[in-house]
Image 1 (cartoon, one colour):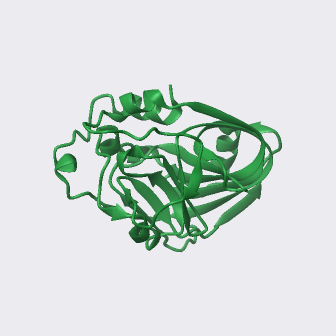
Image 2 (cartoon, helix red, strand yellow):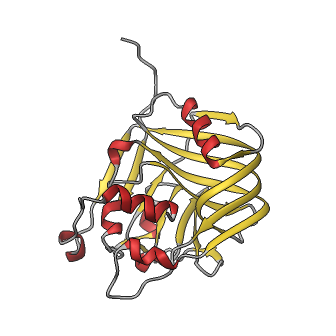
Image 3 (cartoon, one colour):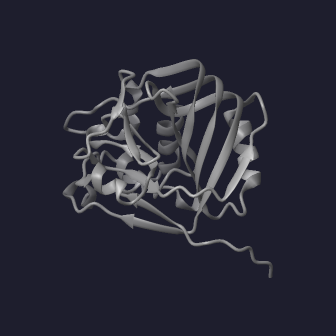
Length: 243
């Protein structure tokens, strides 16, 4: 049996994607505590108050109005995934490719599709299409309804970073299967949840994750949530790709 050599590397996650889908939008995990678990990652904020992107140890809040700011260390998150990014695989990407083509190319770089990978793409984009969640008010609606209000934003001729995770299909419901990524411009003034892009040129770096540390909320909302709905796959597709 063949064996490849790899150092164990932990990815930390708070709560479940299926909990977020069911409207569990609050928890006690702070940005400060999250940064103690990793310097790279993504998620959202309590009440779905924008998208979260952590790059180089700094947590950014990407709001629905298009604004970007450094997140308050005391802010809370109901769902996030982080790690300390150590590039195991690096490669130039083909020029002038869209998201689906980039995803196929990156999959071929991986040692195995059965592991998690933190993914970072730094590049020059002809265009990038994004959405950003709108802050919700109680009583919270399921995420498939909450994301109906998301505006689609398209930026042209920008440089920035696409960052997130490539997650195996068997983790559906724990996380988002496939590539889940957020974007932030190099000048840190705009960003959002990535739907599609055309990349003029760029580089990809992958950090292989062998260990998943999962922390579940100790809240009534989580205790009572329906975490395995029959239409789980459809809900994830709708909320992640705005279909």
